[in-house]
Length: 115
Image (cartoon, one colour):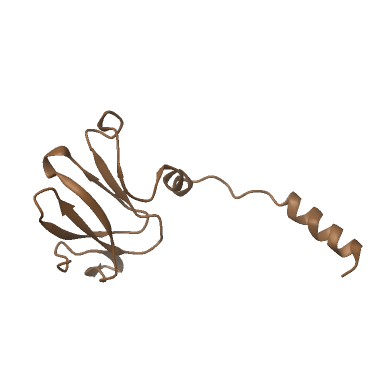
């Protein structure tokens, strides 16, 4: 490859504008997955699970008393957990969530598989 082509490619790479900021960029910066949060800044929630991809997933939610349940999270969705729920952890599982299609719109079913 000639030095002129290399210099041209390098200059082009340095002048490419960065992608514009979006709400999804903010979510990626604040943490994907399960995080403990300050209730003073989250309307009383003490933790949350943020899904940072454009798909539906099932998460396993572990409660302090040893019980657990599956919860569906939609694309770029966030689930908040309050102190009385006593959620200890939440994480992605490979089991697909139950979905409904209503008038062409995909959404999570109210019931989800056991995890």
